Image 1 (cartoon, helix red, strand yellow):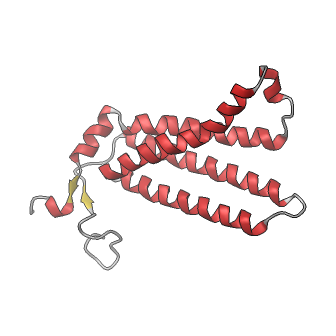
Image 2 (cartoon, one colour):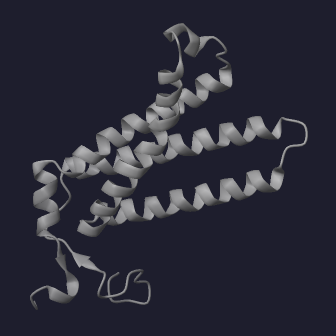
Image 3 (cartoon, helix red, strand yellow):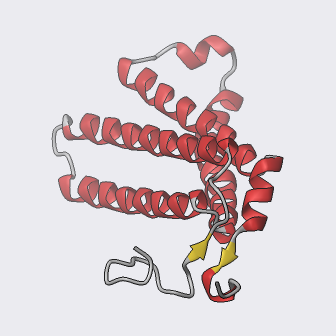
Length: 172
């Protein structure tokens, strides 16, 4: 539907691609979606537990959930552009998810691990909620660690190099 009233992207941002995306790019996209789902699961677990507390700050929880939801939707939109071959999207995902996002996921568990006197201390007060949160976070980290290298596999690099912006494409 390029060039119609239903076109979503401005002409200067539209890309034409000579072929389908390679499996590595599809794997990267799928892993990013899994990471987003794990992040949403972790956020919902957090909010559910906090809402169960007396004097829960509903407004604050709703605001936090709205901010996280917005971030996840933006990441999904960028991942969709990456799937279509946009190099800028791959760079943004690499820095945003692969560096900043991954660091934010790892800092808290790493600090807890380093501050524990013994490994058993980490599991001393383990609750179902903590286990569920840990499962979501582990899935999130693994998904990111799959997605980022997949975006840079040799077939993916060729795919991103082959993307030609529509306004620079040779006339047919």
